[in-house]
Image 1 (cartoon, rainbow, N blue to C red):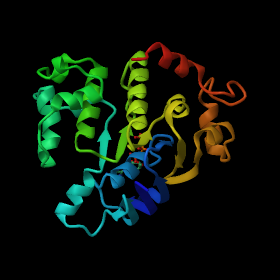
Image 2 (cartoon, helix red, strand yellow):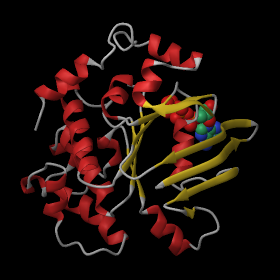
Image 3 (tube, helix red, strand yellow):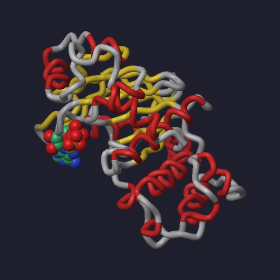
Image 4 (cartoon, helix red, strand yellow):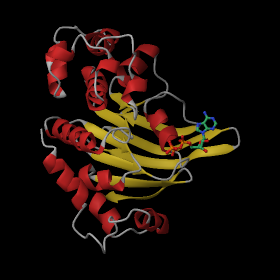
Amino acid sequence: MILDVQQLVKTFGSHTAVAGVDLTITAGEVHALVGESGSGKTTLARCVLGLIQPTSGTVRIAGHPLTGLSRKELRRLRHQVQIVFQNPYAALNPRMTVRQLIAEPLREADRPVTDVTAELARVGLPATVLTRYPHQLSGGQCQRVAIARALAVGPSLLVLDEPTSALDVSVQAQILNLLLDLRDHSDLAFLLITHDLGVVRHIADRVSVMLHGELVETGPTAQVLDSPQHTYTRRLLDAVPGLHPPDFPSGTPDIAALTQGAAQ
Ligand SMILES: Nc1ncnc2c1ncn2[C@@H]1O[C@H](COP(=O)(O)OP(=O)(O)OP(=O)(O)O)[C@@H](O)[C@H]1O
């Protein structure tokens, strides 16, 4: 078990953002977290990343609780969970070259900065981008650099916060393919926060549906999307044209077609 969240509660003053969540993610799993804006997805992710302290409940990363650790232990455990944000331009320091951007997390983790080119190759980028700055890259290239930075310290879980929604549609498919490729060639697991149920259908093994700080439904993706048990999940599905099971019982044709067209 890479991630084991038990009875997690996070309150801000009198507002309860996360209201008793249980969530488990195993090695190699792509777990999607969906729900409307303000339902608590980011707050849950920030607790998982150790960026904020839960009000109560536990977060275990590879069996180790995130609480009660020394700073050194917490730092080491934090390397196990990395995040990739929605907007790569905002997430990358504009004054650093790609080489510096990849070397930085390696140095912070006391790892040798030996083969930045190999880190780039993992995300499908050529060595020619090493000397460029973020503004000299396309959105898709920037997101690949952000993914390479996250992967550099060898995490077991990558939190992806709307990783494709700021990108052009054709580039979205390439990034999704990259993520699937990384998953297929390692034990890396993903917690994918997204509003895009087409993306969920395409890459998630399991999905959790969040409403008012609670997970109202969790299960294998096909089961949740094709036979939603909770009325809120049905409403989410109804809001997406072409995704509802009676229209397209066997997947999301547009995403599948896109992905084929954009194969690397
Ligand atoms: N630091 C904070 N202080 C006070 N309230 C907060 C704080 N962070 C989040 N909240 C509140 O907690 C609730 C959940 O917010 P959160 O950002 O986790 O939702 P979300 O599902 O990620 O939304 P979105 O999809 O828009 O990113 C919201 O009502 C938000 O206003």
